[in-house]
Every structure is written in structure tokens, then in C-alpha cells.
Length: 316
Image (cartoon, rainbow, N blue to C red; front, side, top):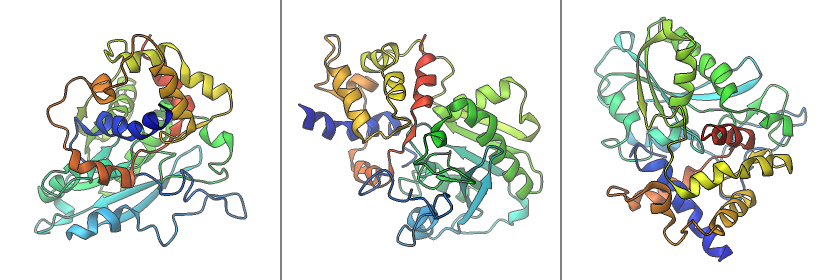
């Protein structure tokens, strides 16, 4: 049973975070800390030369120009941002282009917008339509692990939830894109947690002077209408909070904590784990299983356990 649960977990995560987007999508090969070793001064090393990065691994291979950028938040997290300034034809002058910022959801990173082919992934489609495409990567994901003074091995590194994503990551990214595109207002596209970040910020009248429009995919604000028995059991039991207080500050979706989480939930009498994909998402017509291997090359990503606690609280 334990081995079955471990093998099913990637499929569950794949279905949950791919179904609605068809927009694209890590799994670190040896461990969740493949690029997370500390440097001699305690800072996180950048991805090694053997790690090609998002531009080289997913964008340039299709003939697109791609730029790697970094921005530091006010609380010290160094975030990776990719820019696709032109489509494959590159016929539109860059100065005339309208910027679009794409923000991924929980357990994901910016590759979510680039996983499928150029005809099916939103990042490529927008670039080909003449937009200046910027792709953000939230703190704690593979290419945004650096910090000015902390290592991901430090519990303090993971002391954040989506509150900090709203207070620090989102404004830092917005302001960076805004400055580097001639102070043009930008279109914002968020998925799942990326929609929650926008709703929380915009409702407080933050960043509105930089926003042209917002498209929210799978939007969440409150989670008390979640129908999935597995998801509801996880939230109501506050399983994530248990792991947090036991010292699991980073929640790796493919790690032991996630395995214990699924095992505990599946032991409940009202949960059917024989078909975990349907149990999470309901009946689905459109999951393209051919994308699963690509998904597992890059996703799912870790998040802070504290973040999951905060998300679970939205179900009450």
C-alpha cells in the first residue's frame, strides 16, 4: 500500500495542477535539494552549469529569444524571472510591446506556462501574439532558492506563507517588470495561488497603478466550497500544521511528509484512494497523459509548510 501511494502521488499532483491550464510544467532527479547546497558564506548556490535553466531547457529550444532576470525582495529572497521579448517571427518592435506577467500556483514554478508545445502553452502563444512575456518564479522554487543571508537548509528560510508572497514577491516582480518596460501598465495572468496573490493585493488597492488587466485562472479566495474529500480531510485535520510543528518547514510534494500525509488521509473511511485523480479533481475529460513525463522532469516544486497551513485555514 505504501509503495502504491508513493507511485500515485505524482499522478495526483500532475492532475491537480495541469488539468485546467494545459499551459505547461520538475522533479529534482536525486533530491529536492539538488541545487540547494550552501556556499561558504551561507548563501545558496545558483543552479549548476549542468542545469540548463528555464530559458535554455524550455524556450530557446523552440527558437525563441529568452532572458534570465533576478529581483531581490525586501525580505531578502532572490527571485528568478524569465523574459520572452519576441515571438518566433520577431516582427514587432520591442518598444511597442505590452508586457504580460505570468504567475504560477502552489507546488509549481514558471515552467507551468511552458510545458506543452508552442501552440499549446500560454507563454509561447502570448509571445507569438506580440506581447512582451515575463514569467515569475516564487520563493522556494528551483530557480528562486537564493537569499541574501539564508540557505534553504535553515528553518528560517521557510518561515513564510502566501501573505509574504503578496507583501514581498508580487510587488518586487511587478515593480521590476514595470521599470524594465518603460513604465507601461502590464497584463497579469495568475493561476490558482497566483490568483489569490492578486486578489489579496488588489483588494488592498496595491499595485493597481501598474495593472492594465488581470486574468485569473482557477481563482481561489475562500476554499470552504472545496468538494474533494481528500482535500477537505487534509484541511480540516490540519495535517500540514502537525508536520510544521514537528519540524518539517519545507513541504516537498515527493518527500516523506507528503507520503505520510496521503497515507493518513487514505486511512479515513470516507476517502476512496483507489482513483485518486478523480477523488481530487472530479471526473475529467481532458487530461493529456502524454505530458506527464515532461511534468515530472520539472515539477512538482516544494513550498513552505507554513504556506499550506495558511491555505488550509481558508477552508474554514
